[in-house]
Image (cartoon, rainbow, N blue to C red):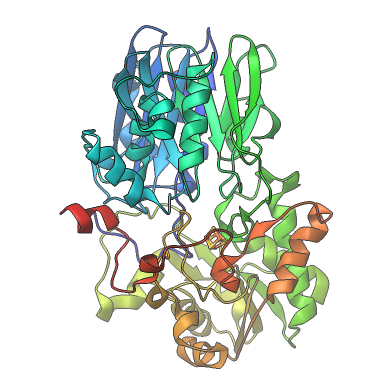
Length: 496
Ligand code: SF4
């Protein structure tokens, strides 16, 4: 598969879904749920279901609609299911790394879908291998699956042969034991014989929320937009450190680990989450508009029109327009049908990659001084060609405004920007980037401005990871992860 280097922003890392709904076609509902979560990962998709006796699965490479059809959906029988859309952060983009993982255990099927990255995955993997557990893929998500397959006592007392689960609900015990061992980001949906479980790391780095159908049945999903799609109503978020069980008795909550601080990824607000999703009680679109307003307050400029980079920067552009009084206008159209697999021009034909995806609306741009609002600049591959596109479309001036601060630090918690050298703001200062992208001016939203924009909307009730902007990581990061020669495919490097 050829990756689309002209995809704007960093790559999202997976959407997870789970459903307990007797009497409904859970495979089809999971398909539609994954379709709503497609923006979180386009490399592969998969569904695992169970009827309480047998388990069934289908997964493959590509978009949800490329992986599933009537023929492979209908055999997925049962009343509970988990599903996954993937973009790879550990493990190559290969079908053996597609999720959910589904294995047979002594207590029935175990299916796991994971969003996030474990920062101690190598240590955990080594522990498994030393105990004779074979692994078939190169992801931290399979490590999680195999850890959950073993009784909780294995991890706490080291006795693998006689360990037993210490609680009436063995799966809660196992998930709790995993949480004690794991470091990093994980939002999990887990299929067992009789129930779906959901778990979120104690910092709540990646989102996860619960919903229900008005006439019975429960859902867990990365984002609330998937609930609306399938006709379920939003209940609440899975709390950081919480384990939730969805079964015939409803939703039961267990403490996996007390959460002492929250650190939801602030990039969910900036770019990842769909604008109609709700996070921490706030509609993403509203928060992005607030970021745009803050940006206009911090970095005003004389101009005739405000244009947003479609689609993710549109709310921030509208916010910038509202605060500045400069009219918002569409200046660029986007071809929404270019997926991750289109044949990419080589570097000499770089502009064609942009032209395939974006076209200027020349009637709106002619002789105008344009404020071009983008939500983030990570690698810097897209914004320069876009500035050039606007100029070719007739813009007299192009002033770039970015509704988040410069991305200067790598992410190890589930987002594909894992080395400094990938980040243009690590290589160049703002003036250097302005020259590189040939803008008339360039300004970013300040870190306090971004945090305040969110906190204002949230009434100051939450905490966020801002590490890629601030360098302030919410967990300790092993030194070797900062090695610039390391690629994201850690396991391939270690095990060949
Ligand atoms: S480092 Fe950035 S992208 Fe990664 S979890 Fe933190 S805020 Fe999100």
